[in-house]
Image (cartoon, helix red, strand yellow):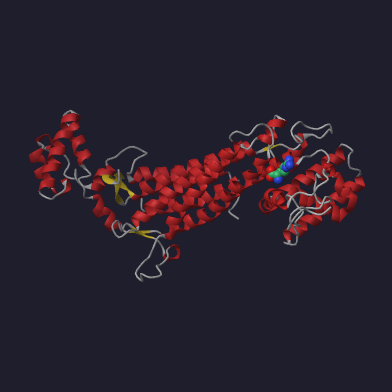
Length: 480
Ligand code: ARG
């Protein structure tokens, strides 16, 4: 029997399901379904699962000692081929599972054909992908930690640098640079929590579910879990092969992490513009222009912002794939892996680049200080000083607003008024501290522990570092 159509196809012996067919698959159908270019990266998980499965089949008497030993040796040999980059995928390998079984038959003969008992590719792929997501989540947490550390280190050296704080991208009230930088670090802290949550939910073992309805063979899912270092077993075999919620949760955590990195990236782009000129990105994280010799562009920050579109797309792609799928396994689910792998690859690139970019930033203290001292951004402080003198806030707001308008008419800011002029306009403030319109003093007057004062930022920094250490418990895998 020859393949219909031309090009890559599968021989009946190569396929896992040739028995009931009399025709070869059409080349176009085969090309569409062949998933090996994507799922090959699960080879570690797949081989680990196969070892656990061989042991389980041996325990229940399906594999005798000789076949068990032959299979284990065969799997070791295949692992060595993968590790050494020598494993060869053939055109007839439909997916990773098929390729490994085909190779196992080549390496250890007929014994290799016994390993398929008690297992379906449906539970096998769910098992592989879950463990992959758990490992990736842990690695990404370590990558996020590196960005947080870069932010925290910058915050530590700038915790009392006065900077303008914004709402609506209009100067609002003075803060400290340390306060601002830590705001980003706290958002990332929530991301690490979400990645851990996603890993926690993925950490359940579906092997033993079979195609959907469990098995007549007496395999024990709990033993798979122990053998594979998985914390739990999936509670329902139909759910186990149909569920990709763990991947959605993972992608959702990645997308929101991307949004946070993108917002940070956007700020770095703003800060390094000539208009802001708050900071320069280190040369190693900047690029030039092919035509404009003077250019030094914050490309990494822009690329991080750009990559977030992909991360959001990955999440949406999987949600749309799942929507409307009847239980249980459907081949649509093969489309679960590209977005998951894409999100992992994207963040593996983005996180170290962002950590380095943040660490490379050199801020201009004077420029920040000057910007914070303008824009009448202490108007609220003046209104609150009136409130302390018994003026209702509504009136205080009105009167300080009128004073700002006066200043603006003369082309000045509120901060340009000397103390006497302020008291002349607002007599209730007679005797109030002379540094009312000094941004540094204004920031220092803020008592709240969540606020911008240096003592508060120091506390926030310590809390962040403690929280991160505690949450990690030394368990986050280092970035690869
Ligand atoms: N390669 C498939 C996937 O990635 C698993 C195979 C299940 N195929 C099947 N015909 N049941 O989801």
